Length: 143
Image (cartoon, rainbow, N blue to C red; front, side, top):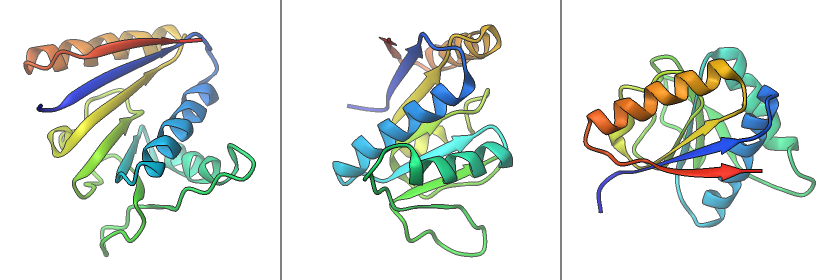
């Protein structure tokens, strides 16, 4: 079937809405026994994601860890930024402005866009990138 790319376009403008939606996608994929990697814009966003995955929903449990170059991850969900290279995953959730270099090492990519103009512009650039690489992203409007 090849690599599937899905864009989730949120009506909400506040940046936390993207992280919250990323948590929900992660939990859904985790319950399907998938391996997930969250690629964030920077270390601070990786930290925020790490914290949010514990607290976004009462009673949810998603075992996760930030990537550490010194050892292989044990958790099914990993979080990284910059040049952090995750193991091969079922789902890559990209929260960064650029498509990560390792994007082809996942079965599926989720791109989350919020109502912020800068975020939308970066999203359009990523959409173009995928199309230039012969991928046909699907788009879902959320909320």
